[in-house]
Amino acid sequence: MPIVSISLNDDILSELDKLQKSMGFSGRSEAIRAGIRSFVADEKQKGVLSGTVHAILLVVHNDEFDDIVSGIKHSFEDLITTHLHSKIEGDKCMELFILDGDAERVCTITKDFQTNKKMDNVKLVTL
Image (cartoon, rainbow, N blue to C red; front, side):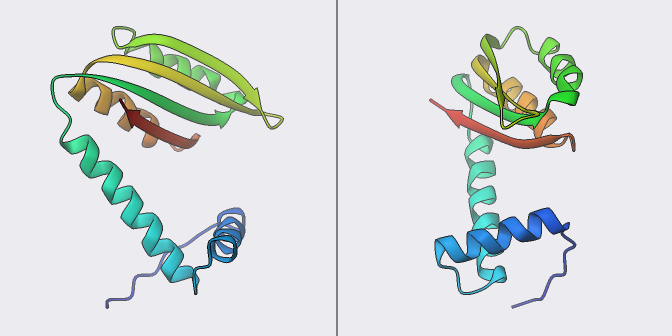
């Protein structure tokens, strides 16, 4: 198996160690491989979406980045049927978008949030 090197900040490394222990992985590499498998499965699911889809998009971010969320959101108002904003854990915010529309556009809004480094977590659930 090839060896791949990655850099992680202290916070992510600490979270990885907690996950490793709580989920019973034998080591960090096993935990990272499981995470990558999950990520690949999610991306494959998006790849087969077509036509009109109904979905829920969850986005977690620091409250100082509300303007970034708003900017992305305004580009996809045709998809968003409902948007809920909630404060969680101090300065963290959670956005819940209910989406109804073209699969390609649903994938695009998801990608726009996922590739923005200011977003902490992005999860798409198709219905």
